[in-house]
Image (cartoon, rainbow, N blue to C red; front, top):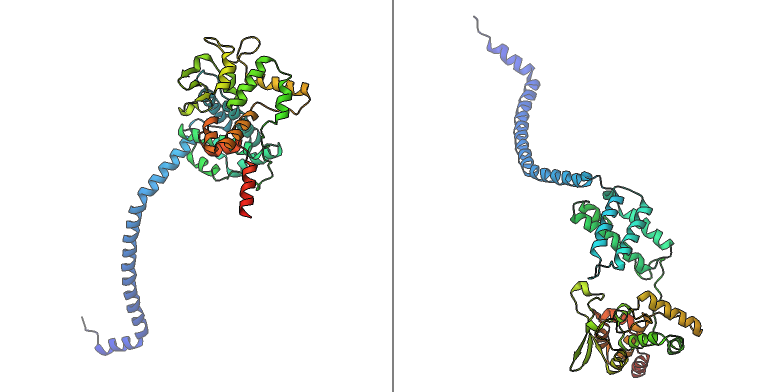
Length: 365
């Protein structure tokens, strides 16, 4: 076999030099690209190894949420029904009698269903909740009443999350809707409750029976809640070296394990001991039974009509007592007398002492 002449090879190289350079450049670039691809592949493998556990965890969470959402095919009507059943059993007095909160829960949740419909419980969003709130404003509910109803809806969803009926994400969504602020909404404010005027009290008492007069006098002097004064029992009154003390077993804050102690002064002691008994009601009606809050309110209303004076309500007598104690002592004394946990609550009942405000104003001049 003959050899290829060297001159011929060199001529071929000279003639095809640009193509040879291009081939060399492409080979070098391909090697670099191959190395970059290998490095990129290693980076992708590391990233994949890092994020896959997170993806698996998020997938598991999503599946769990979907399982919760579809566990019972939970609709809003079903959630409301189960929560109402819970509320009827939870909001009860020690005697087993349901409190007014159970009825309030029922009203708020039923109004929600009527507004947004029987949607999936997990689909409730702030826009639908805002629509429910606007409907309450149109019905004439006060700002405080609306905020209370919105809070009951949130409590229902919080209960649903705790029992695995709804996802916590829907609770987070509806919690973003803020409460209505004073002066920042079209909802009206509640009417300010004032103490009973002296002429109203005296004129209406002349139209009351003797048993009702005794009830009103004790209520006025002690500032108890209407339910507390109506439910006074001899079994709950203790004799101490300093006088009689009333410790009602049933009161507003009994569920908080708080005691309610009412010290009965000499004048109150004289009124109640005029009809002393070993047991039963301290302030009985004509039939010898306990007055109910409704009966108390109706008797006062009828007496005001007969006397021709503006109607007042038994709860206003607490405002009389709070203002009187604050004027003679201080706000802390009024808090103790009314059985409030926080002094801010007492400020609602106690009127500002205008004479003290006038003295402060003159001192600033």
